Structures are given as C-alpha cells and as structure tokens.
Length: 186
Image (cartoon, rainbow, N blue to C red; front, side, top):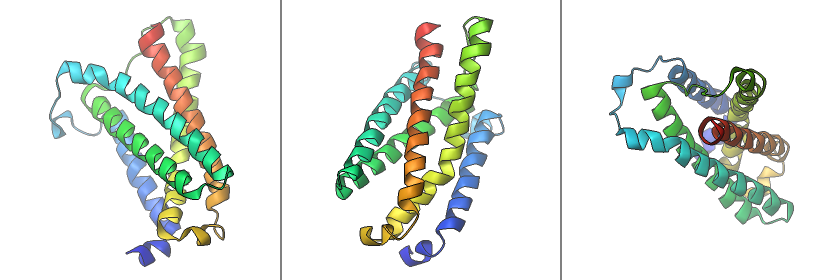
C-alpha cells in the first residue's frame, strides 16, 4: 500500500481534498440529513464550541512547537507534533461537523456593525484559509507518511509544509477569534 500511495500523492491529495470539502460544505449547507447521526444531549452540543476552542488552542501550540522543532533539526519531535496537530484538527472537525449537521451554523448574536465589519471578515478569512489548507496538509502528510525522512528533502514537503503550517496556524487563531466573538464577547 505504501508504495502505491507513494507514487500517487498528488492524485490522493486531490481525492481526499474533494471528499473532505464535500463533507464540510455538505454539512454547512444542510445537505447531510440530521437523522443520519444520533443526537447528543443539549449539554454535550453546548459544550462542543468550548471543547473545540481548547482543541484549537492546543493545535496552535503543537503547530508552533512542530515548526520550532524542525528549525532545530529535531525531525522526530517535529513529526510527532505535526501528527498531534493533525489529530487535534480531525477531532475539532468531527465535533464541528457533528454540531453543524444537527443544529446548523451558529448565528452571530452581537450588533450588526460588529457582525458586518469584524465577525464576517474574520470568519471569511478563517474559512478561506481552512479550505486552502486542506490540500496542502494532505499533500505534506502523504509525502511524510510514504517516504523515509532522508527522501523528504528531495520533495516539496518543506516548501509546501511552510505554507501549510503558516496558513493553518493563522486559521486556528482566527477560529479562536470567531469563538471569542460568538461565545465570550456576545
């Protein structure tokens, strides 16, 4: 399997990206029926945004630490931290999609001016960066998982990884800003 995946990283990246975006936009646009999943209690659903904020914060830390690790030449630590970041992101996404499928996207409860001039631009940039990150993340992860470390230096892993990590980090920070506006400020 590793050899086959190794020879098809761009195609697998495209396939995984399309499937992921279909799932995310299907959930956000209400195309996935609510009855497809068991409904958790209101307390669990109400806790999801707070758990996701904690997951996002942890991911910010692991991405930054992973970046610092590779700059110091600590390849094994970098790999563990970036895989931890990916795991945190997957946990975040599963919880987010579950809540969105059952309840729809959260409405903004604050004033219209804040909504129009702060919340929407922040949310739009967060979503745009998250969408752009998906194929970049799949690409660098597939490269990393299908090759020995020594071979990664002959691939685009480093160049694409820098971009992916930067955008991913900004997206998580903006996601936390959206959380603060939705659940702490208003």
